[in-house]
Length: 328
Image 1: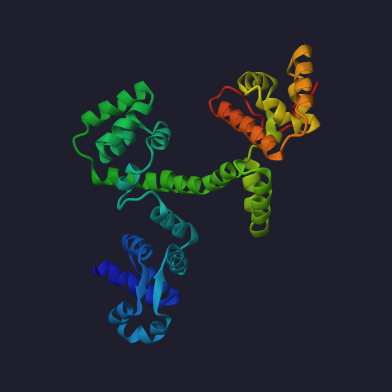
Image 2 (image 1 turned 30 degrees about the vertical axis):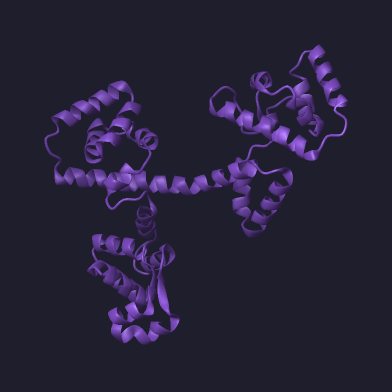
Protein backbone atom coordinates (compact mmCIF):
# COMPACT_ATOMS: atom_id res chain seq x y z
CA UNK A 1 0.00 0.00 0.00
CA UNK A 2 1.45 3.37 -1.03
CA UNK A 3 1.93 6.26 1.32
CA UNK A 4 -0.77 8.16 -0.55
CA UNK A 5 -3.28 5.37 0.09
CA UNK A 6 -2.30 5.21 3.77
CA UNK A 7 -2.70 8.96 4.15
CA UNK A 8 -6.09 8.87 2.41
CA UNK A 9 -7.39 6.10 4.69
CA UNK A 10 -6.09 7.91 7.75
CA UNK A 11 -7.83 11.14 6.73
CA UNK A 12 -11.10 9.26 6.35
CA UNK A 13 -10.62 7.53 9.67
CA UNK A 14 -9.98 10.80 11.51
CA UNK A 15 -13.37 12.19 10.55
CA UNK A 16 -14.42 15.51 9.06
CA UNK A 17 -13.40 17.87 11.89
CA UNK A 18 -9.86 16.58 12.43
CA UNK A 19 -9.19 15.85 8.77
CA UNK A 20 -10.39 19.32 7.88
CA UNK A 21 -7.75 20.87 10.12
CA UNK A 22 -5.06 18.77 8.44
CA UNK A 23 -6.25 19.74 4.96
CA UNK A 24 -5.97 23.41 5.94
CA UNK A 25 -2.24 22.95 6.53
CA UNK A 26 -1.52 21.10 3.27
CA UNK A 27 -0.27 22.35 -0.08
CA UNK A 28 -2.81 22.46 -2.92
CA UNK A 29 -1.08 19.60 -4.78
CA UNK A 30 -1.23 17.43 -1.65
CA UNK A 31 -4.93 18.15 -1.25
CA UNK A 32 -5.58 17.17 -4.86
CA UNK A 33 -3.58 13.95 -4.62
CA UNK A 34 -5.20 12.80 -1.38
CA UNK A 35 -8.70 13.89 -2.48
CA UNK A 36 -8.47 11.96 -5.75
CA UNK A 37 -7.30 8.83 -3.92
CA UNK A 38 -9.93 9.12 -1.19
CA UNK A 39 -12.71 9.38 -3.73
CA UNK A 40 -11.73 6.02 -5.23
CA UNK A 41 -11.00 4.02 -2.08
CA UNK A 42 -14.39 2.35 -1.79
CA UNK A 43 -14.84 0.14 1.29
CA UNK A 44 -11.86 -0.09 3.67
CA UNK A 45 -12.14 -3.05 6.04
CA UNK A 46 -11.74 -2.62 9.77
CA UNK A 47 -8.55 -4.71 10.03
CA UNK A 48 -6.84 -2.41 7.54
CA UNK A 49 -8.02 0.64 9.46
CA UNK A 50 -6.71 -0.92 12.68
CA UNK A 51 -3.25 -1.58 11.28
CA UNK A 52 -2.97 2.00 9.98
CA UNK A 53 -4.69 3.97 12.68
CA UNK A 54 -3.71 2.10 15.86
CA UNK A 55 -5.13 4.20 18.68
CA UNK A 56 -8.17 5.16 16.59
CA UNK A 57 -9.37 1.57 16.03
CA UNK A 58 -11.78 1.69 18.96
CA UNK A 59 -13.69 4.54 17.33
CA UNK A 60 -14.06 2.78 13.97
CA UNK A 61 -13.71 -0.97 14.52
CA UNK A 62 -17.37 -1.44 15.49
CA UNK A 63 -18.53 -0.07 12.15
CA UNK A 64 -16.82 -2.86 10.22
CA UNK A 65 -15.00 -0.36 8.05
CA UNK A 66 -15.31 3.05 6.47
CA UNK A 67 -16.43 4.19 3.04
CA UNK A 68 -14.40 6.43 0.78
CA UNK A 69 -16.64 8.17 -1.73
CA UNK A 70 -17.03 11.43 -3.60
CA UNK A 71 -19.54 12.63 -1.01
CA UNK A 72 -17.37 11.89 2.04
CA UNK A 73 -14.37 13.48 0.34
CA UNK A 74 -16.34 16.60 -0.49
CA UNK A 75 -17.63 16.88 3.07
CA UNK A 76 -14.08 16.74 4.42
CA UNK A 77 -12.84 19.39 2.01
CA UNK A 78 -15.73 21.71 2.89
CA UNK A 79 -14.41 21.83 6.46
CA UNK A 80 -11.13 23.37 5.35
CA UNK A 81 -11.56 25.16 2.01
CA UNK A 82 -13.88 27.75 0.45
CA UNK A 83 -16.89 26.30 -1.34
CA UNK A 84 -15.80 27.43 -4.82
CA UNK A 85 -12.36 25.86 -4.31
CA UNK A 86 -13.93 22.57 -3.18
CA UNK A 87 -16.22 22.63 -6.22
CA UNK A 88 -13.25 23.10 -8.53
CA UNK A 89 -11.32 20.20 -6.94
CA UNK A 90 -14.31 17.85 -7.01
CA UNK A 91 -15.14 18.75 -10.62
CA UNK A 92 -11.59 17.89 -11.60
CA UNK A 93 -11.80 14.57 -9.73
CA UNK A 94 -15.17 13.72 -11.26
CA UNK A 95 -14.16 14.99 -14.71
CA UNK A 96 -12.93 12.92 -17.66
CA UNK A 97 -10.64 10.09 -16.57
CA UNK A 98 -6.93 10.82 -16.35
CA UNK A 99 -4.17 11.57 -13.86
CA UNK A 100 -3.06 14.89 -15.33
CA UNK A 101 -4.81 17.74 -17.13
CA UNK A 102 -3.42 16.45 -20.45
CA UNK A 103 -4.69 12.93 -19.76
CA UNK A 104 -8.12 14.39 -19.08
CA UNK A 105 -8.10 16.41 -22.29
CA UNK A 106 -7.31 13.22 -24.18
CA UNK A 107 -10.63 11.82 -22.96
CA UNK A 108 -12.68 14.84 -24.05
CA UNK A 109 -14.34 14.41 -27.44
CA UNK A 110 -12.55 16.19 -30.28
CA UNK A 111 -15.75 18.09 -31.20
CA UNK A 112 -16.05 19.64 -27.72
CA UNK A 113 -12.32 20.38 -27.48
CA UNK A 114 -12.22 21.95 -30.95
CA UNK A 115 -15.29 24.07 -30.18
CA UNK A 116 -13.47 25.51 -27.16
CA UNK A 117 -10.02 25.91 -28.73
CA UNK A 118 -11.22 27.75 -31.85
CA UNK A 119 -11.83 30.80 -29.62
CA UNK A 120 -8.35 30.71 -28.04
CA UNK A 121 -5.08 32.27 -29.20
CA UNK A 122 -3.22 30.09 -31.75
CA UNK A 123 -0.22 29.90 -29.40
CA UNK A 124 -2.40 28.53 -26.59
CA UNK A 125 -3.91 25.95 -28.94
CA UNK A 126 -0.42 24.99 -30.12
CA UNK A 127 0.63 24.32 -26.53
CA UNK A 128 -2.48 22.21 -25.85
CA UNK A 129 -2.16 20.10 -29.01
CA UNK A 130 1.54 19.58 -28.33
CA UNK A 131 0.70 18.04 -24.96
CA UNK A 132 -2.10 15.63 -25.92
CA UNK A 133 -1.68 12.46 -27.97
CA UNK A 134 -0.97 12.86 -31.68
CA UNK A 135 -4.09 11.03 -32.89
CA UNK A 136 -6.32 13.24 -30.73
CA UNK A 137 -4.53 16.39 -31.90
CA UNK A 138 -5.03 15.31 -35.50
CA UNK A 139 -8.78 14.92 -35.08
CA UNK A 140 -9.07 18.30 -33.32
CA UNK A 141 -7.06 20.07 -36.06
CA UNK A 142 -9.39 18.79 -38.78
CA UNK A 143 -12.34 20.38 -36.96
CA UNK A 144 -10.76 23.83 -36.66
CA UNK A 145 -11.17 26.47 -39.40
CA UNK A 146 -8.51 25.85 -42.08
CA UNK A 147 -6.62 29.14 -41.75
CA UNK A 148 -6.68 28.93 -37.96
CA UNK A 149 -5.53 25.29 -37.99
CA UNK A 150 -2.59 26.13 -40.27
CA UNK A 151 -1.56 28.99 -37.98
CA UNK A 152 -1.59 26.53 -35.06
CA UNK A 153 0.54 24.07 -37.06
CA UNK A 154 3.08 26.81 -37.83
CA UNK A 155 3.25 27.77 -34.14
CA UNK A 156 3.82 24.12 -33.22
CA UNK A 157 6.65 23.88 -35.77
CA UNK A 158 8.40 26.93 -34.31
CA UNK A 159 7.94 25.76 -30.72
CA UNK A 160 11.19 24.12 -29.56
CA UNK A 161 10.27 23.63 -25.91
CA UNK A 162 7.49 24.80 -23.63
CA UNK A 163 8.57 26.89 -20.67
CA UNK A 164 7.28 25.73 -17.31
CA UNK A 165 5.51 29.01 -16.50
CA UNK A 166 3.72 28.98 -19.89
CA UNK A 167 2.59 25.39 -19.35
CA UNK A 168 1.33 26.20 -15.86
CA UNK A 169 -0.56 29.25 -17.14
CA UNK A 170 -2.28 27.20 -19.86
CA UNK A 171 -3.15 24.51 -17.31
CA UNK A 172 -4.72 27.14 -15.02
CA UNK A 173 -6.80 28.52 -17.88
CA UNK A 174 -7.99 25.06 -18.90
CA UNK A 175 -8.82 24.10 -15.35
CA UNK A 176 -10.64 27.33 -14.52
CA UNK A 177 -12.51 27.81 -17.80
CA UNK A 178 -12.78 24.60 -19.78
CA UNK A 179 -12.80 21.64 -17.37
CA UNK A 180 -15.11 23.30 -14.83
CA UNK A 181 -17.55 24.35 -17.59
CA UNK A 182 -17.38 20.84 -19.04
CA UNK A 183 -18.28 19.32 -15.68
CA UNK A 184 -21.21 21.70 -15.28
CA UNK A 185 -22.39 20.98 -18.82
CA UNK A 186 -22.23 17.25 -18.14
CA UNK A 187 -24.45 17.66 -15.13
CA UNK A 188 -26.96 19.72 -17.11
CA UNK A 189 -27.01 17.13 -19.86
CA UNK A 190 -28.50 14.60 -17.44
CA UNK A 191 -31.88 16.36 -17.67
CA UNK A 192 -31.70 16.22 -21.47
CA UNK A 193 -30.85 12.51 -21.28
CA UNK A 194 -33.87 11.80 -19.07
CA UNK A 195 -36.06 13.93 -21.38
CA UNK A 196 -34.96 11.83 -24.36
CA UNK A 197 -35.74 8.62 -22.45
CA UNK A 198 -39.16 9.91 -21.34
CA UNK A 199 -39.94 10.93 -24.92
CA UNK A 200 -39.77 7.25 -25.86
CA UNK A 201 -42.27 6.12 -23.20
CA UNK A 202 -45.87 5.43 -24.08
CA UNK A 203 -48.32 7.94 -22.63
CA UNK A 204 -49.11 5.86 -19.56
CA UNK A 205 -45.46 5.25 -18.63
CA UNK A 206 -44.56 8.89 -19.31
CA UNK A 207 -47.28 10.12 -16.97
CA UNK A 208 -46.26 7.63 -14.27
CA UNK A 209 -42.57 8.50 -14.35
CA UNK A 210 -43.13 12.26 -14.50
CA UNK A 211 -45.48 12.04 -11.53
CA UNK A 212 -42.91 10.00 -9.61
CA UNK A 213 -40.16 12.48 -10.44
CA UNK A 214 -42.35 15.41 -9.35
CA UNK A 215 -42.89 13.75 -5.98
CA UNK A 216 -39.15 13.38 -5.40
CA UNK A 217 -37.79 16.53 -7.04
CA UNK A 218 -40.21 19.06 -8.56
CA UNK A 219 -37.39 21.27 -9.89
CA UNK A 220 -35.80 18.40 -11.82
CA UNK A 221 -39.19 17.32 -13.13
CA UNK A 222 -39.80 20.83 -14.52
CA UNK A 223 -36.37 20.86 -16.20
CA UNK A 224 -37.03 17.47 -17.79
CA UNK A 225 -40.49 18.50 -19.01
CA UNK A 226 -39.10 21.72 -20.50
CA UNK A 227 -36.69 19.67 -22.64
CA UNK A 228 -39.17 17.03 -23.74
CA UNK A 229 -40.73 17.24 -27.20
CA UNK A 230 -44.05 15.51 -27.76
CA UNK A 231 -46.67 15.39 -30.48
CA UNK A 232 -48.50 18.30 -28.82
CA UNK A 233 -45.36 20.43 -29.24
CA UNK A 234 -45.74 20.33 -33.03
CA UNK A 235 -47.58 23.66 -32.67
CA UNK A 236 -44.10 25.16 -32.14
CA UNK A 237 -43.00 24.33 -35.69
CA UNK A 238 -43.11 27.15 -38.23
CA UNK A 239 -45.41 26.90 -41.24
CA UNK A 240 -42.45 26.29 -43.55
CA UNK A 241 -41.22 23.59 -41.20
CA UNK A 242 -44.61 21.88 -41.20
CA UNK A 243 -44.50 21.70 -44.99
CA UNK A 244 -41.12 19.93 -44.78
CA UNK A 245 -42.43 17.61 -42.07
CA UNK A 246 -45.56 16.73 -44.04
CA UNK A 247 -43.49 15.70 -47.06
CA UNK A 248 -41.55 13.18 -44.95
CA UNK A 249 -44.28 11.76 -42.70
CA UNK A 250 -45.38 8.21 -43.40
CA UNK A 251 -48.78 8.84 -45.04
CA UNK A 252 -50.27 5.79 -43.30
CA UNK A 253 -49.27 7.06 -39.84
CA UNK A 254 -50.65 10.61 -40.15
CA UNK A 255 -54.38 9.69 -40.09
CA UNK A 256 -53.78 7.39 -37.10
CA UNK A 257 -51.83 10.08 -35.23
CA UNK A 258 -54.50 12.69 -35.90
CA UNK A 259 -57.30 10.30 -34.91
CA UNK A 260 -56.40 10.84 -31.26
CA UNK A 261 -55.01 14.38 -31.58
CA UNK A 262 -56.47 17.56 -30.17
CA UNK A 263 -58.55 19.75 -32.43
CA UNK A 264 -55.71 22.33 -32.40
CA UNK A 265 -53.15 19.86 -33.76
CA UNK A 266 -55.60 18.43 -36.29
CA UNK A 267 -56.47 21.92 -37.56
CA UNK A 268 -52.76 22.77 -37.69
CA UNK A 269 -52.03 19.95 -40.12
CA UNK A 270 -55.16 20.43 -42.21
CA UNK A 271 -54.36 24.12 -42.64
CA UNK A 272 -51.11 23.23 -44.40
CA UNK A 273 -52.89 21.17 -47.07
CA UNK A 274 -54.79 22.12 -50.15
CA UNK A 275 -58.58 21.97 -49.87
CA UNK A 276 -58.67 18.69 -51.79
CA UNK A 277 -55.85 17.08 -49.77
CA UNK A 278 -57.41 18.23 -46.49
CA UNK A 279 -60.74 16.68 -47.48
CA UNK A 280 -59.04 13.38 -48.32
CA UNK A 281 -57.21 13.38 -44.96
CA UNK A 282 -60.49 13.96 -43.08
CA UNK A 283 -62.03 11.05 -44.96
CA UNK A 284 -59.03 8.82 -44.14
CA UNK A 285 -59.37 9.67 -40.43
CA UNK A 286 -63.11 8.95 -40.44
CA UNK A 287 -62.62 5.68 -42.31
CA UNK A 288 -60.28 4.33 -39.62
CA UNK A 289 -63.04 3.60 -37.15
CA UNK A 290 -61.94 2.66 -33.61
CA UNK A 291 -58.15 2.68 -33.21
CA UNK A 292 -56.10 1.24 -30.34
CA UNK A 293 -54.65 3.90 -28.07
CA UNK A 294 -51.20 2.31 -28.37
CA UNK A 295 -51.31 2.59 -32.17
CA UNK A 296 -52.21 6.28 -31.91
CA UNK A 297 -49.40 6.94 -29.42
CA UNK A 298 -46.88 5.05 -31.54
CA UNK A 299 -47.83 7.04 -34.64
CA UNK A 300 -47.65 10.33 -32.74
CA UNK A 301 -44.26 9.43 -31.22
CA UNK A 302 -42.96 8.51 -34.67
CA UNK A 303 -43.93 11.92 -36.07
CA UNK A 304 -42.58 13.80 -33.02
CA UNK A 305 -39.24 11.97 -33.32
CA UNK A 306 -39.10 12.76 -37.05
CA UNK A 307 -39.66 16.45 -36.24
CA UNK A 308 -36.78 16.38 -33.72
CA UNK A 309 -34.47 14.76 -36.26
CA UNK A 310 -35.34 17.38 -38.88
CA UNK A 311 -34.79 20.16 -36.34
CA UNK A 312 -31.42 18.70 -35.32
CA UNK A 313 -30.30 18.63 -38.96
CA UNK A 314 -31.46 22.22 -39.46
CA UNK A 315 -34.17 21.34 -41.99
CA UNK A 316 -36.98 22.78 -39.87
CA UNK A 317 -37.21 25.35 -37.10
CA UNK A 318 -38.93 24.82 -33.77
CA UNK A 319 -39.86 28.01 -31.90
CA UNK A 320 -39.26 28.34 -28.16
CA UNK A 321 -42.97 28.74 -27.49
CA UNK A 322 -46.36 28.49 -29.14
CA UNK A 323 -47.47 32.10 -28.65
CA UNK A 324 -46.18 33.13 -32.08
CA UNK A 325 -48.06 30.36 -33.90
CA UNK A 326 -51.24 31.19 -35.77
CA UNK A 327 -53.86 28.70 -36.90
CA UNK A 328 -55.76 29.73 -40.01
